[in-house]
Image (cartoon, rainbow, N blue to C red; front, side):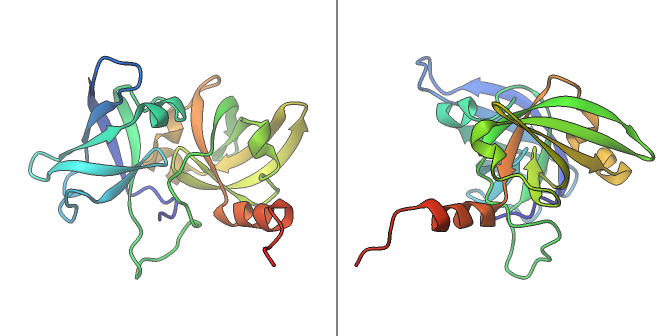
Length: 209
């Protein structure tokens, strides 16, 4: 589990194919901030842009770790198989503060940035979400964008989904990769965990006798 509070900015340094067939995934080598890996061991979970991954190797002295990402995960996430900056969050511990909201690290869908404009000292980020996620987005509800816990300020329903708006404060722009977003960029979205359970309870199968 995670909170959507980014704890470090990393960088994907290398992308190595794990095979030649279409069904093979890739091995990513990620550089972490100084000291970030001091309490990380092989097998620990780390979210990359909101996608939960398992550290297969950890070299704290070199500030690097590796993850193996499957072809399925590559197909369902944005820009995970490319070198570049990435948001990092280590898995939540039982005694940690829950500063954002409950996040599972499972990307639910891909959104597209439709606007990113100044709004006072902050910036308004507008994202188009696919139809299967639109019903889970609500005014003042929670959404995770590239692993960052954010609050929805506005939702406009569209025939094939919705467009939602978020106010991104300067601190978030400086300490995550969101500041480098541009119109047309694809982003990882994870809907609120509780909303998924509510939908299942309301529309799922009837209880067994």
